[in-house]
Amino acid sequence: MVGAGIVGLAHAWHAVRAGLSVTVVERDECAVGASVRNFGHVCTTAQGGDVLPVAQEAREFWLHLGRDAGLDVRRDGTVLVARTAAEQAVLDEFAEERGEAVRPLTAEQAAGLLGLSPVGAVGGLHLVDDLRVDAPAALPVIAAHLRGLGVRFLWRTAVLDVVDGLVTTTRGPVRAGRVVLAVGHDVDRFFPDAADAHGLLRCRLRMLEVDAPGGAAVRPALLTGTSMLRYDGLSAQPSAAAVREEVRASRPELLDQVVNLMLTQRPDGRLVVGDTHHYGVTEDPFEDERSDALVLSEASRLLGADLVVRRRWRGVYASAPAPFLVAQPRDGVTVVSVTSGIGMTTALGLAKRVLDQTLVPA
Ligand SMILES: Cc1cc2nc3c(=O)[nH]c(=O)nc-3n(C[C@H](O)[C@H](O)[C@H](O)COP(=O)(O)OP(=O)(O)OC[C@H]3O[C@@H](n4cnc5c(N)ncnc54)[C@H](O)[C@@H]3O)c2cc1C
Image 1 (cartoon, rainbow, N blue to C red):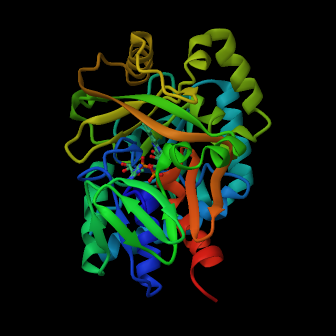
Image 2: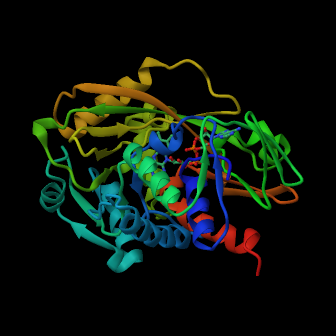
C-alpha cells in the first residue's frame, strides 16, 4: 500500500485479514493528510445512490475495527437541524424515504440530543446510524493495530514509481505482487492521464477549532441547511432546490465559498467547525480571510454565542465528478482515491470491494 491515510490503512486492514503479506509505505513520519484533518464524521445516512451501500458496509467495518483496535467509535449519530420551512421540508421528505434510519425531532428534542440549542431551529432529524471518531487519534491507533496484525510500515519513505512489481522508494526498492496507490489527491503525481480522465481536482477546505459555548457536551455531529446541498441523499430530495434558492437569495456568499456549516466535538470538548470548499488542479497557496470569517460568523449565529478560535487549518482532498476513482493504469497497480470528500465514511467499505474485485486471487 502506498499512503497511510484512511484509504491506505483500510486496504491494509482488509488485505492482512485476507491472509496477504502487507507493507505500507508512507512519505511522512505519520499520517498528516486529509485523514487527520477532517471532522471524523462517518456520515452514513445522508449518502445516496451507489455510495449508500458502500457507506453502510463501511459503518459495520468501523464498529468491527473499533472493537479490535480499541478505538473509540462514537455511536451518537448526527442531528440535522432545519431553520427554515424549506429545510424542514427536506427533512420530512428524507424521513419519508429512509424510515427507521432517521428519527424526526422537534426543535426542543434536537436541542436535548445536542446539548445546546441551535438558534432559529424549527425542527430536526436524528440520523441514528452515523458514527464519529477523533481522526487525529484514530489513525495512529489503526496503524498500531495493523502493526500488531503483522503489517510492515515504512515511514518517511516516499514512493517514486511502480513498474512491474518493483516499487522504487527514496529508501530503495520494495518488491510487491500487487500495489494499491492510496495517495489521496496526489494521483496526478504518478498517473496524470488517469487523474485527467477522471476529472480529478484538489479541493481545499478551511477548518476551525473553537471552545464549546458554555462547555456544552455535543455528542452527535451537527449538520445544517447547507449540508442539505452537499450530501447526495439530502440534495436529491425535491425541496433541496428551494433550500438552494433560499440560500442564494439570503446568503449568496455561502454558495460562493461552498460552505457546509457543520461541527463535531473533540474528546477535549472543543468543537471542530467548518467548512469551505475551493477547487483547482493545483491548490491555491493563499488563504482568503473571508473564508474563516464567514464560517466563524455562521457558527456564532447558529450557536448564539461569540466563539473563541483555538486552532485553524487547511485540508485538501481529491474531488471529481464520480465519488470514487479506482483505476489500474499498469499491471499490478490499483489506484484508489475517494473523490467526494467522504473517505472517512466510505474507505473501509470501498477497500473491501476493491480487494475483492482486483487483488485477492479467486
Ligand atoms: C477538512 C476535511 C474535512 C473532511 N471531513 C470528512 C468527514 O467528516 N467525513 C468523511 O467521511 N470524510 C471527510 N473528509 C474526507 C476524508 O478526510 C478523505 O476522503 C480521506 O481522508 C482521504 O483519505 P486518503 O487516505 O485517500 O488521503 P490522505 O489522508 O491524504 O492520505 C494520503 C497519504 O498518502 C501519502 N502519500 C502521498 N504521496 C506519497 C508518496 N509518493 N509516497 C508515500 N506516501 C505518499 C500522504 O503522505 C498521505 O499520508 C474531509 C476531508 C477534509 C480535508
